[in-house]
Length: 190
Picture 1: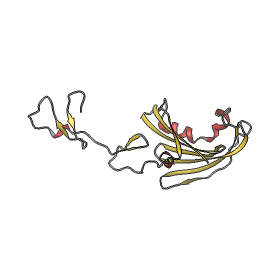
Picture 2 (picture 1 turned 180 degrees about the vertical axis):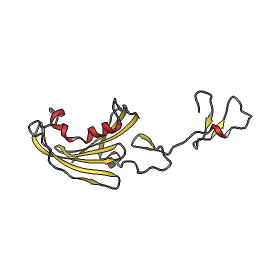
Picture 3 (picture 1 turned 90 degrees about the horizontal axis):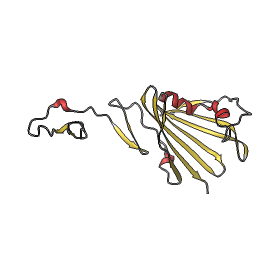
Picture 4 (picture 1 turned 60 degrees about the vertical axis):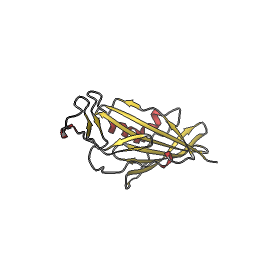
């Protein structure tokens, strides 16, 4: 229902009622432009063309009952969605920004890694010498990127006895305003 005039619409975008003129024929011009939408992982996604170029990212951890799902409210970032997505794919900042959690300031060099194309985007595995409460350990960060702005980072050995997955989807409002939707999951190995 339109909040301004009370026009009522069906799911196809066709106007079904005009309260100000209930007995008059409804003009065909009073239709809405609709877009394909899907609700998945607690988010509603749409495509601004009639046919999406790719499917939504598949994040099996968010449907697996053995994982504990951690829900966080969206983060509002004053940047473009592309810049925000780049931030999560940038492994060079680990040694500088994440000191105190897992960053290793003593080993900032980035070893060569391979990026492969998948059916839905890109994949890479990067082994990083992280520092934790347990000392230095080699951690594989496994990235899957689904265009335009979705990423999943799997951390199979981040904390002994647990596996982690972080799933990100960016929703942009303008070239300088983006919301980040973060779904985190953990799985305890028994």
